[in-house]
Length: 389
Ligand SMILES: Cc1ncc(COP(=O)(O)O)c(C=O)c1O
Image 1 (cartoon, rainbow, N blue to C red):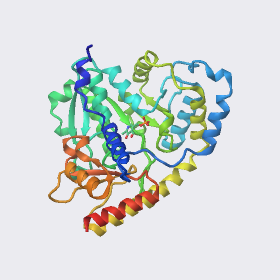
Image 2: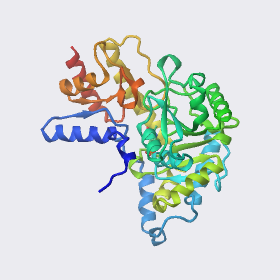
Image 3: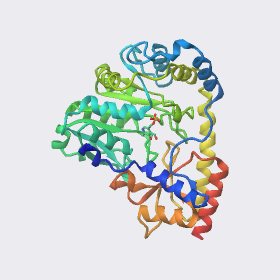
């Protein structure tokens, strides 16, 4: 039986490997605390669950979900209203919004929609691993654009070789950034539009952490930048702001030609999102915005717990970036990312994500997620402190 060569190019998905490692340790009776995965344990707000249940009883919703090929119009309209109010971005819900099964689906369909076999595709390093997989599945060739602490983890466009930029058809990037927590600036957005226009590169601005920002940082959409809609689609998601990772609902917005192309891939792949989930999504967007502030307060408290630990353990000058519920932490001297990850697992039964899993420029860091309950986080901190003393 043949398995396609392109699948061999994709390394095992980081979190599947971690899940297996954790499951094995737990089966051996070890109380493992995972700070690796960004999956909120806090529940989805109740009105969203109630809406799902109510809509699930309506037989109209038991049929194929598409009332139009881009998703339920009422959902797309709710997204457009949210973007207008929150980010001052005007979107035509008919042509510029597409409902998705999470933003991860959008990454995959974006690559399939624009790449021909062998086309170069830019992505940041460190970067979200699903970008690389999406590029390979679409038959493209990833080119890794280093992002570094000294530049606020933003790409330096002038360092991208012009022969690569000329060949590239698309670029993936996300701010607030997974894994580093870095946020973008308006100046950077202008540079991104100019770069994309000069080289005719379609941008996939992946923005699922738009609302997860701290220390006075403002939530932003790249689409608010003049010219952005000429070159980009932005992905967003209900996963993180409303604790809905398992529900699988997100959206693509922006350039109508790109939205049509992504929609064509989607129409030929699945038959849309279960209507009750789209109704529940409308409820989340329209009536549950206060959940975001509630979650930010929870994440901020957890963030401070880890920051206090780091200061106590010797990371005197450490300053976190202002976005996402991740902390991107330099490893102690004498360790590689993997070595310190392994050390924490063996000495404290705490799992963190190794920075090197996000690309070679992630070496020297680990990523901690703040999505575990406070009690477990405090227990993890206690164990790390004991192990390190
Ligand atoms: C940068 C980035 N993009 C996309 C996703 C996927 O989000 P969704 O649940 O909307 O598919 C994640 C999830 O962790 C992410 O970190």
